[in-house]
Amino acid sequence: MVHIDEREPVAFGPPLKPECKETVGTSPFKPVVENFYTTNSITRASKIMAQCSALLLKK
Image (cartoon, rainbow, N blue to C red; front, side):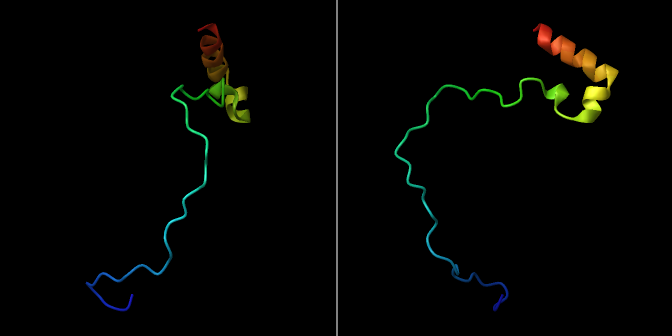
């Protein structure tokens, strides 16, 4: 900051635009994690989280 209360010009070049020739579809993304309650060791060891997981799998 050289000057206080003044807008200085940017010090970097134009933003990079990725070159992508594919289009993004309109269908929703698939979930990455099917069962969130089994993603770490603490929730896997919990009886309550085991019940939540069982309820989730019933749906």
